[in-house]
Amino acid sequence: MKLFGIKAVVTAAVLGMAGPMLERPLHAQGGVPAVLQPNASEAMNEPHKHAWNLFLAVNHPADLSQVRGTADSTKKIGDPGIVVWETWKLARTEVFLDPATKPEPWEAPVRGDEKIVDPPKSSVLVAELLRGKQGAGIQLDPGEPTNETRMNKATFDFIRDNGLFSIEGQEKFMQAKMPAGEKMSFPVDSIEVKASWRRFTAEEEKPEIVDRYYTHRDKNGVLWGLATLHILTKEVPNWFWTSFRQVDGPKPAFPQPDPVGRPPVLNGTVWENYELSGVATEFVDSKGEPIILSDPIIEGGFEHSSCITCHAHAAIRTKVDGVRDEMPFFFGVDGAGQGLTPIGPPGRDTSLPVADQKNMFFNANGGLEFFQQDFVFALRRANSEK
Image 1 (cartoon, rainbow, N blue to C red):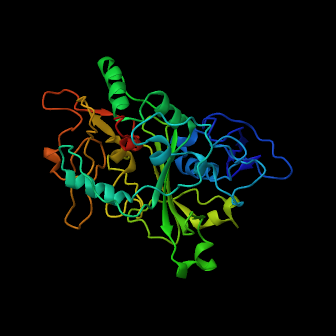
Image 2: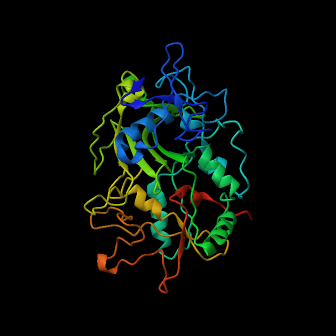
Image 3: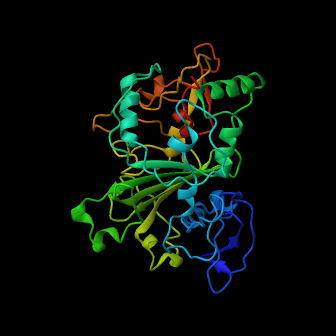
């Protein structure tokens, strides 16, 4: 059987227990469409098709009677119920605890009391700007949470097993790797998602509005609609990056064409109201131009940005002092009031003239100034064990 051009496959635990490259032949049962498993080999050669396959897989209804990350093979995409990625570990409350302690194992039950816990990314960048380029941390009221970041089992296990859930653990990992010139490298089946939700007012709770969104009602009775979904996977060395948006929201300032188009299997489901914003696997295109991939909600105020380049700045200073000392990734604003973040090759301060842009990964003596953390910005949430 073919599903919009690639072989459909099922696994015992789609994208949770098993990796993106593990597959077995399709066996649909009782007329129910089988769960789609993306083919990782297409990430580079057919990235747009691969992006849609990831979208189908992570948004399949979850089987809550099984371990986290298990898709319900008795349901089809669009059926009621929370989806696979919503059962993954929530970064802020299930992985990076305060004070930092080893998080509960993957098999711990899904927590339903907390969900949308991350502040808007724009407030994070304001804090980055205010602290300056020397890495001195500040405290800032982040405003109402509108986002959540979740990770699959491979990502979570790597963090938990290597002690990366704490500042001290990250420094210890760095000390162990740097002498041999080794890097941090997550498993190839690692996946993260970042979701941005819009809050509906009571006046907006009308079928013609809310029925066009995948929704979640929180413990306070507030209804939220999924506005944007970023998906990143380690299937390629610099990760595979893709973003989807609800079509009624703000239009991207730097749209990418979608040569594949929305899969027909989504017709008649809430997911037919979502579209692919773009993909990225490299810092620059074949002409040497920076690849821009951003979303007007998640990256609101700094849309001229690049997921892959910005996340390459997920790095900590090589000094060991028990303090979260991060590589800068926000360099002020341009004349139009847009935030300046890294684009193109990483490590450059884009507020400076090109001739003055030095590689920030190295100090004046050529020594390594920052230790990269394999594009995983979620590690910035780590707290001290003290």
